[in-house]
Length: 241
Image (cartoon, rainbow, N blue to C red; front, side, top):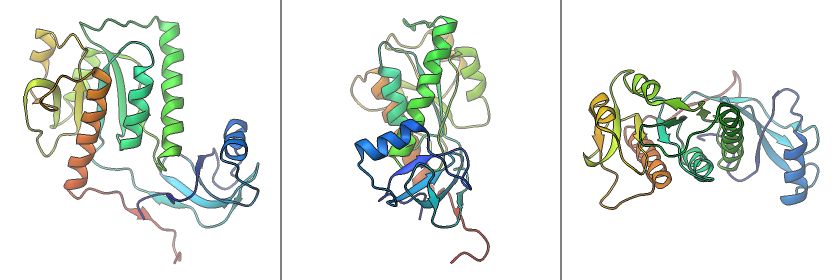
């Protein structure tokens, strides 16, 4: 088993020992999914722990707490802000494919600029999207969604060890140890941004929208990690059979 049961709904709770559902989550399962009291579910904490339970306003634990080690290496996709709901679409899909950290940022040629109050609201919304997508995709770990950053912050993040690259039409095939991918704005990278990070990865033969490139890049990172044999072990409690 790689994580929570894929055949039953997963819902995140604050306390796995006393799994009380948020009102919105209970409403969704009862009214939209039409679960009846006592139906099988998984409850998770979003940081690697989960357990089987029976559905109700206060779910009844129905098995031991299991834990999944944090996946290694940590996979990061940073994408330049785009218009409309495209950041939400990108975060949802990146969560579903298995990325561990998502960082929206402002590049030199980014058209969209969020005022501080809007940036805080939008960051909270993106985290809510990641939580919802994590439940839908049965993830033991909800990805980290960072506050909107500047490019200097992204460049410093990319400098942490090897394995970072810009998505670039003049790039080559990805290195096997790629763990951080930066997706630029639809206006392209500036000369100074290209000079800051040496790695280049081509995401295919065609022109991609920025949000599409983020998802393609995230799927590429996950595929490389899977191909390397790096999968998270499930840690069973002592005496569990």
